[in-house]
Length: 434
Ligand SMILES: [Zn+2]
Image (cartoon, rainbow, N blue to C red; front, side, top):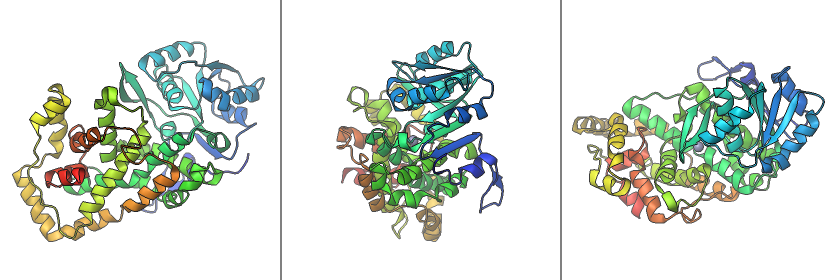
């Protein structure tokens, strides 16, 4: 096969990668991942090694069929037992999943070709049918290597426990032809490592929540190089795309080490979820990654502002603004919000203890967190070079609504983030409304 960009991945699929932190061996549930300049001509070998003697259905949508699906079918004809199916109107809704479950009758599994929609619905349909699947990616994205599927129920997206692919295959020549917007969104959805790690570590130190570093150790092998390659990624250069693909794959695998999505989903993801939940008719149709990128920049600005001060913030007891929430989000959200806020509420006593601790140990508290931060300017410029959306204006998202997302986003999830620290220390308004 052509040039191999697997990096640390082979050690992970073998279960032989050793962390420098705890000197233990780690592996992943996916049997094989290939990141290659091209996989042309190797499709049947790749499939057969993981799905021996199985009867399989290769599923593409009309776009991924052109990009890769037709080639895979052609190159596997007469070599392995496959049929092809072009899903004209793919949908990652539960209806789409049910449709695929029927299609699975008579097959041992499916080969997904590309797109989040096709891949996630196949992931969930094969999971429910207790069958297997592998995926040929057509874009760089985290979702291929996760064990969860994003499926919508009556328009509401839910992240559901599913299973892992047997194999995930990235053909970089195919990826280099995917729409630029998708590459930029993938970049935005992994550069959030920095804001998520800062939030998660802060939560660990303030609320004694769980915190794990294995995924960060893996990501740090490639993150700087990826950031430096932002403009080459936008140009579709293979070496640069390989870095983005590798980081996206590791980001997706993060949950397999930690059993929680905290590793790459904190304040910035909360803001993106808020947009999806409440923008309604004014949702500009931006993707998850695009929204996360815009929110990452806001989170980074807030983190850099607050956590680089030499004076600690002064925490006050947490206030849930009932009236504003009812007004903005509806009465029905209030109960949900009170429940999600429970684990991160500061009462007077906890505020006092924290302020006392900060006044004596602020630098000691904040130093290890600062080490995990990227400078705002670096995120801003690399996202620009990569062609990512950076502001609500770029996204054609109403800027007042976006300000609401920054202000009220903290209330919809139980994860403690910089938005909570800023809110509880009365700095959030000035950060948002300057
Ligand atoms: Zn994400």
